[in-house]
Length: 211
Image (cartoon, rainbow, N blue to C red; front, side, top):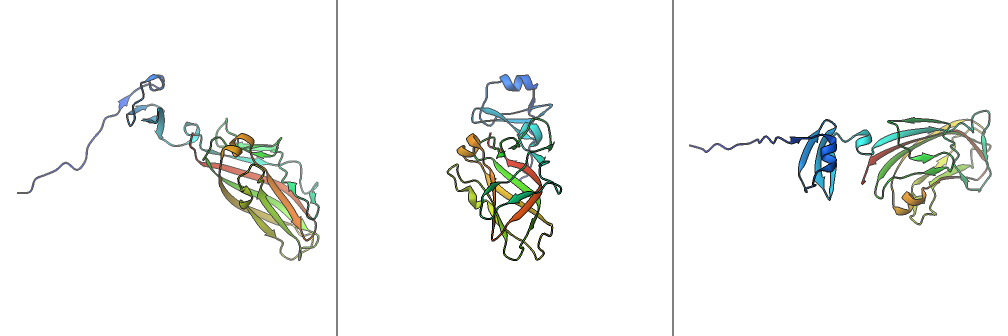
């Protein structure tokens, strides 16, 4: 006759208020639950392990629409002159209030913590006077010390001089200490000829937080 074994166990986690959780003596691996989520003691902090969303973890997204350079006021890129990609964040959309991953006044892309991971989508319209020989180089600024210029791409123009083309691409990057302290900037350079850009949009999502 085979012996029967338990294959599932039920654990009842103590329910507390958020104030009690904030004031409790933290024990590694100890779990508590409140109306806002399930918490576990980890490295001297009570970390919310569920739900992992919105303000509880710092994860979220923001969208910044530039309003300065439009179809009626295009930015002209001089050949071989590196230029900060312009986005004055005239209109901002957020997944929830209180988060910002970009400063439109300084053109700086921001990061909260070392080792945070971000996904950033860049959208703009562009044209070139000589599409056959002109291309754009778009990359993060490398002046912080870390070679962030590796986060970038070369943009070729299909045939059609002075014809509007739509650029849309996603980039992934992590933040080091210099990025957290100083931010970073997107740079764009026209090579082989002049070009114009307008209607710049940034969409930035924090996908991992190490706070």
